[in-house]
Amino acid sequence: MKPGIHPDYKEVVFVDVSNNFSFKTRSTINTREKIVWEDGKEYPLSKIETSSESHPFYTGTQKIMDTAGRVEKFRQKFGSKAGAKTAAKP
Image (tube, rainbow, N blue to C red):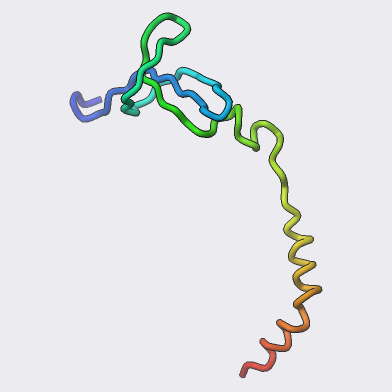
């Protein structure tokens, strides 16, 4: 790598504010806050709103929408009205 053109890549602690889950990883993010980690060393702190511990996809609480059923309900309700309008246009 060329010296002087890359950002500082350092260990950073991220804290999920929704459930207080924290993890340490490497990042180039610049932060104002610092935290003392489990190993006794001080690291930059970044607060995040969603992590793998709180995201619905990873926790298994994600709701899958039945789009095919919704489209069919729309067609049953408005199908004849919408079809008449589009057929009348030249």
